[in-house]
Length: 148
Image 1 (spheres, rainbow, N blue to C red):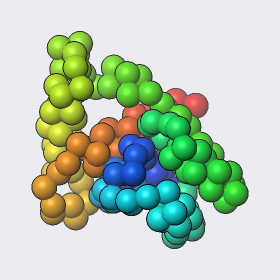
Image 2 (image 1 turned 180 degrees about the vertical axis):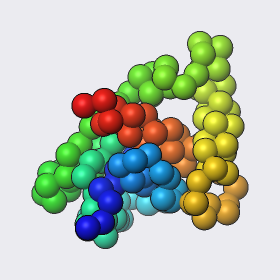
Image 3 (image 1 turned 120 degrees about the vertical axis):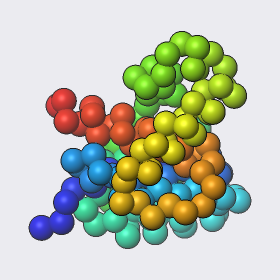
Image 4 (image 1 turned 90 degrees about the vertical axis):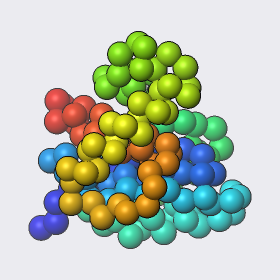
C-alpha cells in the first residue's frame, strides 16, 4: 500500500505546489505558470489524477482559481482544507518576519530552503516564493492532520 499524500498549493495562475507524505516528508515541490484558466483546469485535473495516494489538498488563496481546484478535488473524492496566509505564517514566523508581504516572502524562502535541503526532494532550481510558500503550507497541513 502506498503512503497517503498531501498536496499543498499556493494558488494563482503561477502556482506553487508541494507534495508531502502523511508522515511529513517532502516528496517534491515545484511551481507552474499555468497562463490562463483553460490551461489551469486541464493541469489541475491531470495533477490530481496523477496522485492516486492523495488524501488531502490544502489551498492558500481563493477566487476562481481556488474554485477550479476545489471542484476537481471534490470530483475525485479528495478532502480539501483552505488556509489563509496569516494562519500558516503565524505558526512559523514572528510578527517581524511577516510584517509585510515582502518580508514574509523572504522569510518563507529562507525556511523552505532549509526544509528542502533536509529532504530527499530533488529540487534543483532557484527557489521562488510560490514554491517556498507551498512547502510551508504543506508542512502546516501535515501538522494539523496529525493533530486530528
